[in-house]
Image (cartoon, rainbow over all chains, first blue to last red; front, side, top):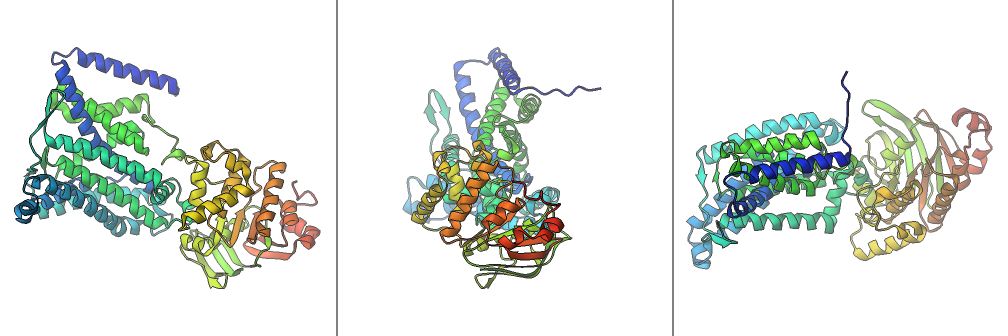
Length: 345
Length: 241
């Protein structure tokens, strides 16, 4: 009855270009279109995009390393934001930081907050993996076989972590008043410092991750375990340890992303849910399981979302990421960096 | 060097090995022969810790190693090279080799071993910056053996190094295995290519239904008709090269 047909790679690319062209023409016809708004959309889109990218890299890392999608990843983002906020508030409420850094206390406090969010969330991720996920693999077959149980466990963890955060920090929205200095002017656009921090820190972290994976011995091990646990065992890599490391790194990335987002919006218990879905969309758009793809997908989703909500309608902001995901899945199911499944990592 | 005593093991609840006994002397080449599904690869997997040994013992250099984690076994100097040319296709040849030396701590040793492997297999030197996915079957097998040698092992276990390769390349690889032994390593080779394996090896074991049925000097095994008929499947056409 139904003829199954498949686009060739070339047709896929042409259709993607066509979609992009139609989209660009459509938004350029918008009455709000001018050079200033375009610049603003670009900067904000890239900023939001790098955050989506960082969380998406974590999801992709866990997917390549553990062969499961971690549905509790948004909660690590949320708890990371709370950790950063708590550390920052603790420092700023004290006297010490004013005595040592009277001028730049906000920046110093924020950097320490970022650092703690990164390290503590990494350790917390390792703990969660060891205590809640590892026992599920004990029946044999490792992570590959325990897949469905771990996915369900991820949903459960998500609820539990939200409730734990609810108990510790209560459900009200916490404003994150990071004193980072006055907004600066870049190319005619006034940009709050929090955006600049997101942009710079995001790129630095992504660069550091690239360096770690490609230039260090541990990074080589992570890539090896991500590709095949059996071969990694045979070359003498401590695979259970490396699975914990992969989970830890992914959660640390989510934690730092949370602290970066905090000052721009607010820190709420429910903030992890929507970022998880959008990061998921980013990972799919970039090609699931591909790390450069996750970053590029993050930029694409960020830019698309910002452009649509600015030029088309801001009230449907959260729907655009999924619109893009559906379009990409229809036209180019492998995503931008779609690789053969066997070539992941 | 390696001593397997009454080994019982399997996958899940399926028992494959029913009490296998084997012994591999230092600096020898031992061939483990048998048809499909007789438990050849299972023995190797149990030795390298990929699957659990249910009962029995495996000792390496006088040390019991059964059910140790795989990376500990590699550190002790026992390395398995799997069947089916398992490499990391998305990494370059040199990265694959560096992974082989993952347990080494010094950079200098790693470079030395790299030179040693390139000495055995000059083809890998020519292609060191290519992705492993672009190599031919023979080159992949060289890469697998080379990766196994990178960690300075005392003993290497090869799982069907001749599978799906042209005779000329098989000959080349077997010559290199002989060189590896001459340089002081112990080799356990699992093969379906009986004639080639027995030509190479000093001693042979024939496995059937998870137990060792026949063992002996390889020269003797080669002309042993019962071996050919009963365990290696059919008459004089056993040797497929």
